[in-house]
Image (cartoon, rainbow, N blue to C red; front, side, top):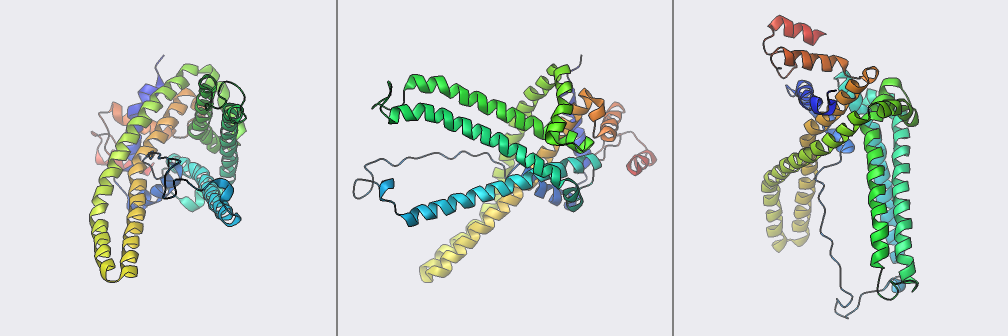
Length: 358
């Protein structure tokens, strides 16, 4: 039995090339906006964490939480609240954009307003499902952390007075790892398989999973193959995207770095004006880098989604959302390769025109 996860790697590339090339500025701009919320700004950078020693500072001590006043706690609460609200808003928009992306690939036309109006209710359901999955993981992690930290803080057990018990931490830490893998797998499969089913058959999230589950149990090796290959593809795609964004950042640093340098010089004469120029340069650099990151990720995200749709359609033909594109790229490949529009290299102009009209 052929492993669809392996066979569809090349087909996904051909489908992506046919969809995105020749490049259309309007299509790429709309897709960049979709990808910005679906995949985030990209990078996946993990900043180094630093800790402040207890004896640092001029007085040899840091301010303890007990001495923090009500005003400081209010500021902290407001900041945390704003972060939570913004995070939830981004998650909500991203959930709806998942459907916009699938509709764009299925119809090979990018229309944000129409797809949003058609699918926002399903996006709300996906948002609720993702929020529930996240709360389960965070809540379970908090319980496990409490089991480790509370006995030590209360002076109970072998970790009393000497920090957290190493044995307890080693015993419970794998539970967090397993829980993270399971919730991540559920969320990922929901995104790449359940969402297309929701679009194809107009189902809820749970309804899509009920439709999808029999195909998983009947084709377990096919889905496991997809998980393994998709992990490799995501790593490769992530590295390529990070390199491309890094190159873009270096290019952007030239004009905006020059503007910031001018701001520094101006600050020596008129400090407020100079600081404003530096702040403007930083803001423009950040916005431009965000736009570059979104544009860079367009082909990668489209490729990964096409790949998942191809695998899903190969496993279960009744759930094939891109049957026409699948047939076109495979027919063209069998005829000797494809041009960017998905037409066979050896096709006559009339043949290519007829296929486009279809």
